Image 1 (cartoon, rainbow, N blue to C red):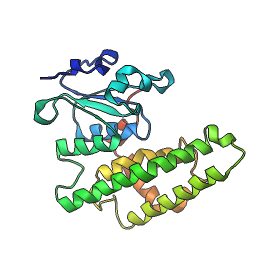
Image 2 (spheres, helix red, strand yellow):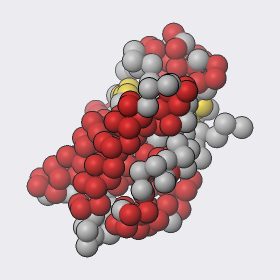
Image 3 (cartoon, rainbow, N blue to C red):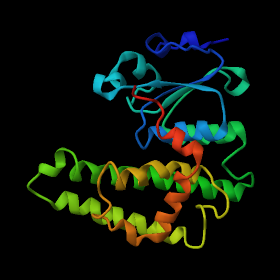
Image 4 (cartoon, rainbow, N blue to C red):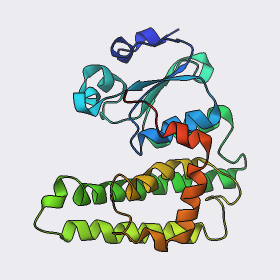
Length: 234
């Protein structure tokens, strides 16, 4: 049977505990989806820093696990049937960990699909649009003379925040009283929008009262606070 040692990525990031989930990540909005979920579930794991400043994500070892060169990625040494399972894509990792532990996703099929649809919404809308807004507001795009791209992503981010605000009306979480992977998928992105991307005023964030209250509830969770700092850059 295959073991962790059979994966080339472990030559660059050796596992100290061969029986634990190995997480290869950085605490970006996508990366913290996995670390928050692991902290929430209590599964034993090791976090390995994939340092973008060193182009770790472009290394042959990392690409052997995720050919797309993006974080997070992980290996569960105790996957289905007891065999190691390697995964990339943050949404897939959330779903896998939810199914593995039977937590943070409803057991009934209808509720399960309601959670999944919001994870897909985050991956197809919130992440890409907020990320582009960040590029044009804070990074190289801010120096572009043509401001139409920035305005496009500001407008779309406002629209998406409106969708989320309506969905959270009268609710604590996306699925009502149940905190799920739907919430975990978005917490890092919404937080990043108003902190790291410096777009709070740009998108009129404080006018989305339901989103703001939901974010405060999420950030109050100890596992979320821990997950936001993993992997440590120190």
